[in-house]
View 1 (cartoon, rainbow, N blue to C red):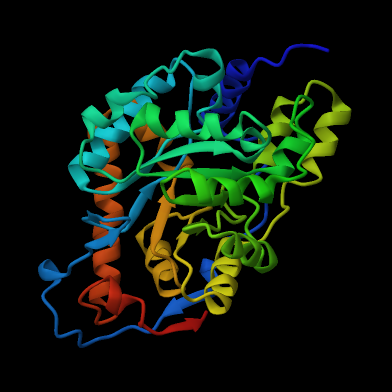
View 2: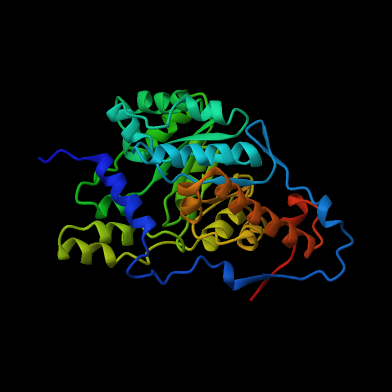
Length: 343
């Protein structure tokens, strides 16, 4: 059996994300189907609007997450450092990309304690795929992933569709839930479970809540389609056709967010998957999100410089503040009670 080159695969993923796709998936996040009720008399000082929040014992200046996007390849070193520096300046949270390559190849390329040195105060999340936490070495992988970057929590990402479409993908997904339950009990840091772009359904969210996870990232459809990316990587027309049939697969981000929050109101949620701007973010808070994450939308800025990342998120933050102002919301808590109407 041919040895899988995980580093090459990560580099191919980055190549595809950086270049315009040949075909755009047609699925929508669902946020465009909702509009805020405009408040023409906000009785607020825009400059006094407060976006601060707390999570896992740390204060964030804004409820934003630089979502997981790169991990363990050489050119990701500068990207991760730009992201960490920006997160420290802005006081927002950051999740690293999959640490599988760093753990298996012992070439961390920036996924080490240098991130914590750059960003000593941020909320920092480690990241492993669900297939890597199964079996005897699963706990050791998880522990090393947390320790190598001094993370505050561990993200376990669920990507069954992507793995099914990769010729070299992990096809055995039995006993994943049990492995998650074991990490919740033994690891000693909060466990966050996220999808990677196809969305979390309510039945799965219930299973994860019962397993004791601390937070869920709905990571819905409408943003990056990993099926379309795997189609671009396909080595044969057969495998390209297999993947492209699923380019629009998944639960739209807004749908997943609303359904899970309505049924599990006490479960902290992250909204990611096609968040275009601060207005989308504001809608997500109103639908129940504690944090809003962006990944692909910021990766071009991350490849340039720390300043480019800071400018990107400063714009998002200002858009959220204007949304607060024009709904009469003095802070994020008030924004969550603003009126959303069908468009």
